[in-house]
Image 1: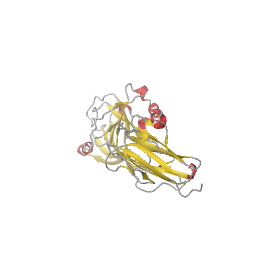
Image 2 (image 1 turned 120 degrees about the vertical axis):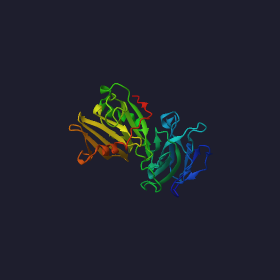
Image 3 (image 1 turned 60 degrees about the vertical axis):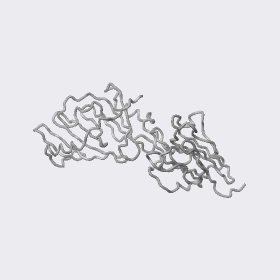
Image 4 (image 1 turned 135 degrees about the vertical axis):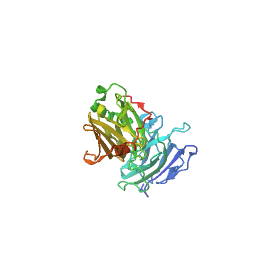
Length: 339
């Protein structure tokens, strides 16, 4: 049979509180917008127009994970992926074409994820959505185009199609922890929690550890906590990336400010102390300002650049004016990091 036209793809979703929606096709949205409702199931089918072509898909489901990792397996050609009646959210999806004509076409799909908006377009079996954050899918667009056509246009709020929790990628960060040799230097449990420090809807993974309490309290932030931040990760192109990390030991400690700035309080010896302040912006750790104190000849405060170059000397009042702009976050809900 001679193919008359390009294949058409149809799909429908099962939506929280609403049930199965009607069929949509060829890039129109299935799901809901601005309602905060989760997708719970999806069915996808092709009108192949004479091509030897099929479509397979699987979803990442709350409490279940990827279907292909279970006895549920991949779904195809209009069968349901997901669940019905369990109130489980869909979190991600993979879709791929099958058949002898599959190489002639690309299937593109884009999802709207909780807290993130429309993610970038995925294609041909790539993951779209999130894993490990507990974020629901709320809507999806799917389109089949001739191979090499490129991704459709439209709204994209986050460039990457898939975001995976760094902790779920733990094997790839284990070497970082071993390199810092924490287990040998510090006896005690490591901890973690999540916080959107960059205000982009994608939580960072923050790893902390207990440290010896500081007994002196004459300097700002000293002696306040016996827990410090040691590593901060983001996901970049599916890979955990260290935004902040150093084996600071006793002479330097990282803390989070109540407004998610990073406070670096350190010492260069008995007479020399420093306070540096940072903010995560995108994938970068942006330096804001630094105050140094030299007590070898009284109390000499100074404002410094990132490279410690002197900007100007400060009065004690001016220095404390900077210190008082920041406050250590003490209500962090840490969870034990299990190896």
